[in-house]
Image 1: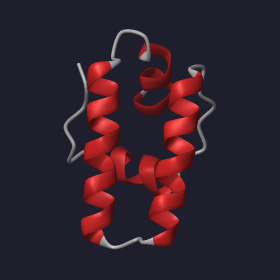
Image 2: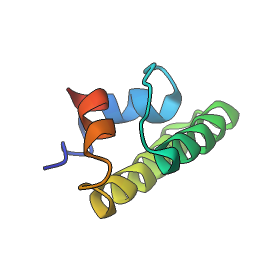
Image 3: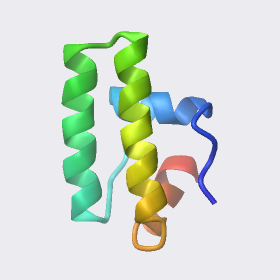
Length: 74
């Protein structure tokens, strides 16, 4: 089960504050893109949009991204 979007680790994840080694290539690509977008526009509205995108990705791919979720939320 995914942590709620209000969990502060989501914000740290999309902003690039978390240093995570991902096992799934799709997660690596997504996080690199989201981190770049967060650095370009660190506003609260943009971060919220990026968290939504990451959440939907992990919700859709929860089973295959289980190792990455464990690395993030341990």
